Structures are given as structure tokens and as C-alpha cells.
Length: 102
Image (cartoon, rainbow, N blue to C red; front, side):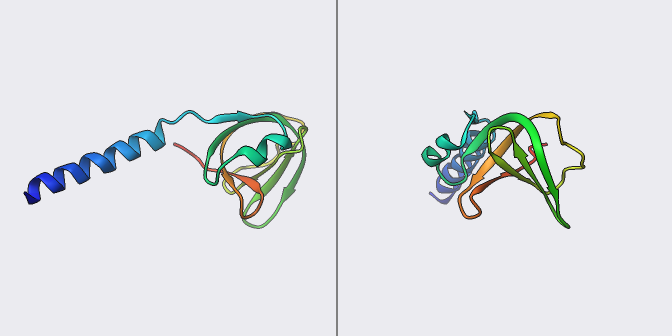
């Protein structure tokens, strides 16, 4: 009985990991779509960087569609470049935090 419970738990954990890793991000294009997002939802953001603020541990990128991205491991400069980012919506800071998937 213990082996069966253990096997079911392992299958459940792997299925949740598989679902999380291979889920399709929701594409957003402006600030109005933010209110429909859930916390920790994966999103796809495209736009041209109009402003970049470099801090000690992160970079805040502001896109031409008024979306802000927070990136910890980015190497500047990104200003005036078109970017596509897969990000996780974080409601606490009311911005997007880029998580590297590789």
C-alpha cells in the first residue's frame, strides 16, 4: 500500500512539473490586460524599450506600451531595441519579473 501511495505521489509531482514547464504563456499588449491576470501567471510580452533604469541588482525596462519589466540577470543596454520576454506576473510589486527558463 505504501508503494502505491508513493508511486501516485511521484506521478502527481511529475505531472504538475510537466504542466508548469510546458504551459503556453498568455500574450499581453497593454496595461488594460493586467487586471485579468492571476498571480504567478506566465505571460509573453513584446515591445520596444523606451526607458531603462539600472539598479544594483536589477534593471527596470519600460516598454512603448507602458508595461514595466523587472530583470535580474539582464545585461544592458536594451534602450530602443525590440524585445520579447516570457515573464511571470507578480502582483506584489505590480510589475513583471523575467524568469529565465533555460
